[in-house]
Image (cartoon, rainbow, N blue to C red; front, top):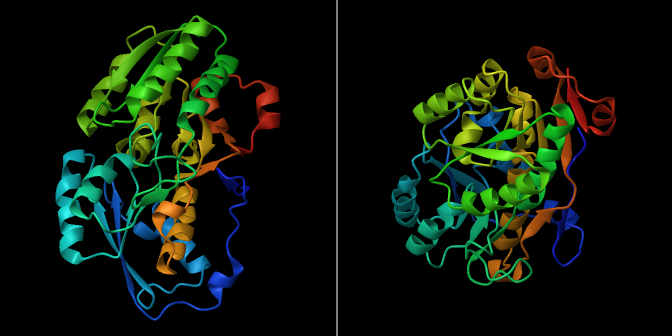
Length: 328
């Protein structure tokens, strides 16, 4: 698997600083990590492990140089307020937010605590930062290019299902970033002559009901918007899509690995790994307001051949040629 390249919006390469490995501060930094999804059975083998991995790569030793207080909203985003209050009581030194819509609650309860967005969508549009180049305030980190890739995801589905006329858009109404993402894919669908079937789900039961209902409708494929709840339920989502005989595409590689037909975008674990570089700089004295928000500049196409066979879908040879990874 080729590692994703990141650059800052100022154009400088986001290379890992070699000097960071040489010497670490004596203070133990307390880091609050908040995620919107469910706590995984094993953090070490989950997508959230990318952050601790990134810290180790920078020379930090967990327990000696830093500790992580993980908190999970379990898909109930109203819990962000209580988690933010708990971080304030714990007096964490830095907060890493795995969901951008957690930031307002974190910031309100912890106004002077640096916040690193491990993953975000349109942080400028959501009012989380002033600009990507100069975030201002106490928040910086990484931003997905979700709005740029949804049109490409639809193109990929059209390549595998050329007769596609109705597309289900799987989204979480509790996710504040999904409204703008939906508008983007709506414009692309209109241009392609495809009608959309909005498919909302904000908890496990709604995921089950929504995807099972699609099997009885004239829907040709599913595109899923990025969401923390969906990410932690990605295996079940992939199973339900296959059961409904629907090709599906998501933005993060982990979905294709879980059984979605394709993913076009990046790896969530890689986002969290990359977030460690921001924490490193802040520990060493940098201000979040001076650290440009980073965005991916290259996107991976991952195809799950097993799922294609299960669905009876013929993937064009050209897509296999251009795929960064094929899951056999």
